[in-house]
Amino acid sequence: MGPQGAGKGTQASELQRLTGLAHVASGDVLRAAIRDETELGMQAKKYYDAGELVPDEITVGMLLEAIHKVGADRDVLLDGFPRTVAQAQALDEALGRLGERIDLVVELELPIEVAKERLSGRLLCRAHGHVYNERTQPPKTRGVCDIDGSELYQRADDYPEAIEKRLRIWERENGQLVEYYDSRGLLCRVNADRAPGEITADLVALLQGGSVVA
Ligand SMILES: [Zn+2]
Image (cartoon, rainbow, N blue to C red; front, side, top):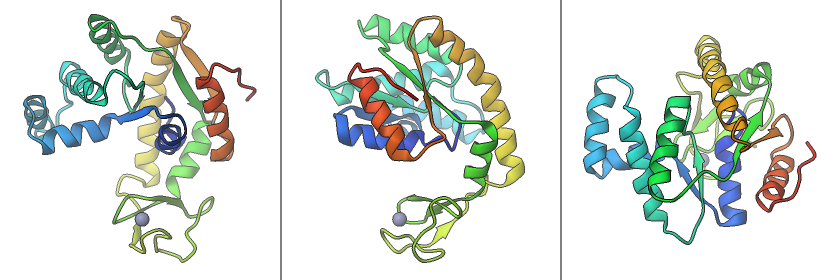
């Protein structure tokens, strides 16, 4: 968990690489289910096309299918879901029926002001969505991806007013979700206002059962 800009996607990829956890991102799962025209994907598409929120049962169903595909011998790292207490409850129930459970919830803590600043300078590459930041992580050549040479752009919803609105909505929902997992003794907080490598090191220690000094 954590606000946009806290580096959830970056950290999740690193953890997949370093620990063998399977990174299951809800956005990727939704896009893949729609692309592959699975039964749940087709249902989700109806809501998506109508500009409505995809109901939690459908999203949870798609995630369970994605988790199933990973296989029983690997643990899963969920990214981008759940976002609300209702979703967390639906996920717990569905996992419970399979004899599975959430072992650990990590909150990447980042002050809203820092998140805003990170997001407002964020640049993505057209080819693969590699992420840069004008101020904190600029590309070697202005406007060009270091990795594949494609053009860098700012997402339409990365303008100040839109960022502010998204972060405020997130803040409201997140408070309740944090409480939900904290009351179950599952929550760990990690300071995300640091270099990505330092955060990764703490996360790896956490997953290996060590304690974190952050
Ligand atoms: Zn790129």
